[in-house]
Length: 194
Image (cartoon, rainbow, N blue to C red; front, side, top):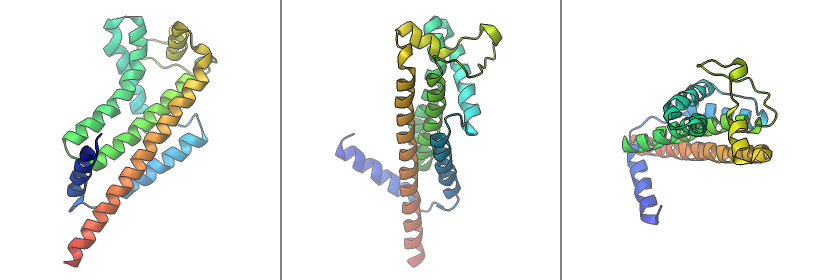
């Protein structure tokens, strides 16, 4: 983004904040801060968004199934992480800046869930879920993908990288969301003082 794009985005966000209630949005940021702390303190933690992320993951396998086994297996994780990215762009089109911030939080939870799965590639201790069967026939996505790419020994390093991006995304959510709340508060105070 160029400086003029950043300035335009900031101006749009400030305009959007006028007349909005900040206090009804505070609980969302408090909850997402809690989610971040839980994810960082317990790699097995999954928030309420975990079920949504899992559903999107499984649907991604179906969407990518016409493109061969490798893409079908990769498609679960791709769909899971692209859904919140789509949300960010969609909410920008709708000019809902707080929803953009929350979408960064959703993206973060999706990445934390994916990091847990990636880190399990060699040990394969996680129970596998599949709406199309499962049991002994279920394929561990990241064991399959990293084995095919010859990168299985890097599973924990890759998982750490994904976790770092997840943390950064949640920080973007919290900082941008808090900035929006502050701007809403300031705009409301300005109106009250007129």
